[in-house]
Image 1 (cartoon, rainbow, N blue to C red):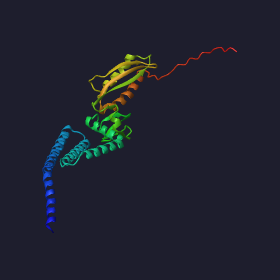
Image 2 (cartoon, rainbow, N blue to C red; image 1 turned 180 degrees about the vertical axis):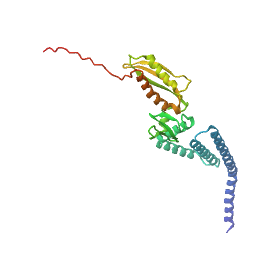
Image 3 (tube, one colour; image 1 turned 90 degrees about the horizontal axis):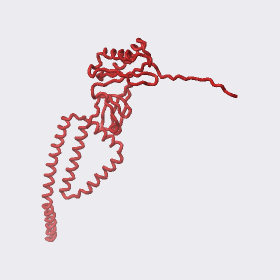
Image 4 (cartoon, one colour; image 1 turned 120 degrees about the vertical axis):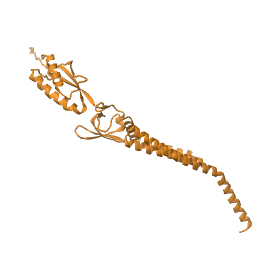
Length: 280
């Protein structure tokens, strides 16, 4: 090898060595950023995990949010480190943005259900075991997932409701307060004694041990209807006693009213026919 080639090799090595030395501060800083960023991610996810434990959120939501936060912070750290090394990050941002837009358009319905599931799990309008009404369906909540809610109806059918629709609709939670007020309507004839009927029904209600003493039961004349005088019997009961109590008072109330000679009318219409002379 001649001296001229050796000289060229020395120049090339010196040139690249100078470049490495020039990039060395950026490389060292990128390593520091990576180490510190990784440590911050661990601290942040650990703090979030403790926060979720204190708030007693749903485990499904906790795991999802922790994973989402963890990956989002790691992607941000990766972009920061690459940028420190001198790589243009605008292309990364453009790719991520385009991918997010495409995924959002393709999964529009699923994302709406996901957002609804997050709201339900965070705000907790109901929980597993509650009896609710939503989207026109009544049932006991069996499972709450990210995308849908499963209800067991009164007939033991499984109803699956998308969370997007459920979270944007009116929800009635019959279980949340632990007690319910009933409003039973008994119709009696216009010829019957209203005070006697009220006394019979109120006495029957007060005899029931599962009727709550406070607020006290009451009965009022609610309506003068077309075919009957409607009495409204109102009382409070615990959720566990509600249905058995309702069915008993309906059956026993009808029997006691009839035993006292008070009739329970049904809708009827009187038709009067008049004969007219027909002229030829």
